[in-house]
Image (cartoon, rainbow, N blue to C red; front, side, top):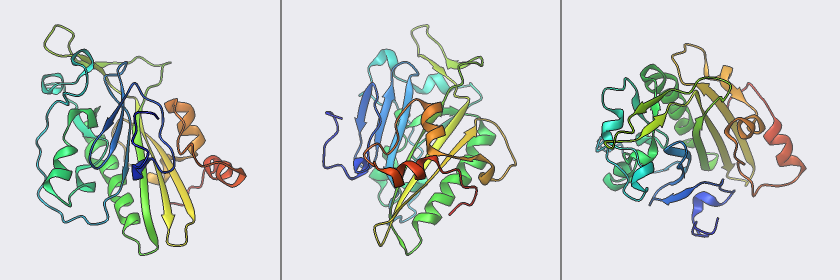
Length: 239
């Protein structure tokens, strides 16, 4: 936490551990050197999206040490999308906002039919939630999940022209809202990194389960019996 500016709004309810904290203007990344990708990405959904044109300026993040840094060549011809953690559509108030989301530190290898369907649908649902008049702010943290009892495949190379990037088995997303009366609600999801036609509600889980699978603590500043119950809640009714 020492490397995170204490006045960053995104960290109001906590921030997980990471090998490297990458502080962007409009979101935060907790980078994993072991996985050569973000362990988590934390944002507040922008309330003033102007729907500017998507920039698509994918590029390496030179703040990450070279031996752990993803490059464009690692994804080229892999069959996997450079999947956004913080969605491009979440940050369309200015071109600078949108441009930041195309740093490869914000990318993870996603199966195309996952990235372009259910993951995209979940991102859109969170934005619709944020647009409700009763919602004051919406905090979102997401990242990869690896099942270590299953084989872990990778993209890229280790021949000096790039790095090997493990392909996640699934992704999590945890959503925390504060309404206009100061009341907090949270919803969490774990979705396999594969095509599916199941509804989003089939992937809704307790926040405690996400913590167990992802190996991080979420919203750790929130304490007390009520918040522990909220973390353990596995309510299939979405917002």
